[in-house]
Image 1 (cartoon, rainbow, N blue to C red):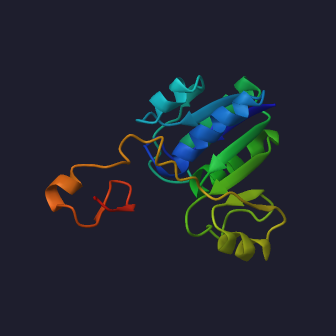
Image 2 (image 1 turned 90 degrees about the vertical axis):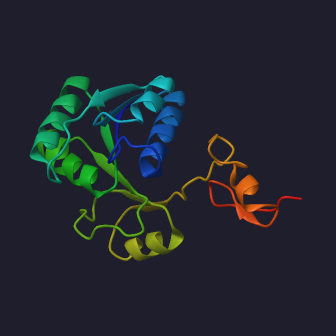
Length: 183
């Protein structure tokens, strides 16, 4: 299957980092995967995972007609079978772009703490908390739960930092917010 992953931005962190990591995992399972989004710091992570990045225009408004046109063109030329949109703007652009033009299916992942009420209820949806999943199941056909990972070991910024030196041996929080104790 050919899958185009569309994070809502290419800034480091959040659901967009999860999108890139999961895109690599899906590719490792034998699928052809591309990543669509504006240029940004996360493009290096896309390339380091051996994935292709297709540049999107920077939107002035969301949903963006320019992004929908470019997304539709990329899906058509790349013969993608599915668009996996992360958060509401890409979801709406995938629905009003390649789905409306070509019938290309889309799925949506929302890791925000609320799901925009205008995301079409027939769009398959993955959310990040059990509470949101339960709430959405009340009016959606297809809701899945995928709790966001917390990989503090894989992020070199997450670990003992200069905070201990500055604040002494009392309890301190490292850069990722874990409470730590210096002995």
